[in-house]
Amino acid sequence: MLRVLVLSTLFPDATRPNFGIFVERQTRALAARDGVAVEVVAPRGLPPFPLDRHPRYAALASQPAHEDWHGLPVHRPRFLNLPGTGGRLHAAMLARALRPMLAELRRSFPFDVISAEFFFPDGPAAIALGRTFGVPVSIKARGSDIHQWTRRPAIARQIVAAGCAADGRLAVSLALRDDMIALGMPAERTECIVTGVDLARFAPRDRAEAKASLGIEGPLVASIGALIPLKGHDLLIDAVASMPGVHLRIAGQGPEADRLAARIEALGCSDRIRLCGPLAPERVAALLAAADVMALASASEGLANAWLEALASGTPIVIPDVGGARQVVTSATAGRIAARTPAAFAASIAELLANPPPAATVRRIAAPFTWEANSERLHRFLAALVAAHRGT
Image (tube, rainbow, N blue to C red; front, side):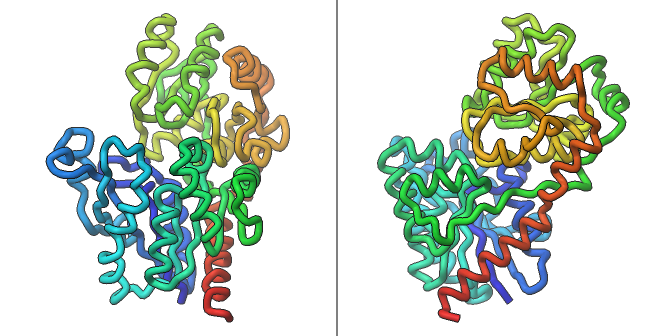
């Protein structure tokens, strides 16, 4: 039996059901495998009292310390998030908070390996905890943890040190693996295990009927992603605003919501371009099946789940040349890789609207990206780390 402790500050909760949902899906697939037992530690970073009562943190503070989440045992301990520190103390505070909690947990769940699902603060904390409990550590890079957090020198040093100390490292794309190695992390035991997609939920439907259910007539572009500057939604809004008769629906939530809504209003496109807010996975699937194109103008990515979910739905994509884009857009059937300008995105969207590839052909591109394949490789990778650690 392989006992895996999944450590992830990215994990859904009752107030944020889509937050880190890819970690949940990966973990559920791993837990479903024979010979694997999994428990999840999803820490909550909260400021000291009374700041933790602030509306910004109230919902997070109210989450239960332990719960069953879709069949997974999930522990949600608190760790100290000190305002004004720029996050540089997060990993140390996380490790400090988890030591006593994990010592207690080991009595009922003697975990063999720690699988950290984000490089910061999860990675450095996992290294410290692995040393405390004498177990190997795997750290997975997903994109912004490598591309954004490493822009802060104090945090970059922690990330690289953790990567060098880890027993194994994972990346969601080959390009991200190259970026990790370029930072100074060892190439040995640094592997790419791409994300998965639920091929049952995300599948082609009658597009006309799907559009009608959304009250849309005419071409539809969908975008799925948090409303943050990194995702480039303003660029996409400008692109579609220049395309008469084309509709755009953006699913996601985040601090950019008001600014993006004001931009749509200023462009006079409120009848065609709308923010949908956060959508449940079933509604995301319906939107992607209705769309003629899925476009996401991110400044950086690892390998976005939204790309694969669109392809599985039979919907081609328009994305920049970031992360694992070239692992996914392997032909014109899959969509287009476009420069990050409104004009380039508009041109690529127009090409796909004029000559749409057959939905069944688009879907075949996503067929290898299953959660079953993901969990099989992850199981093998973690088991090898444990075997090497034990000298077997």
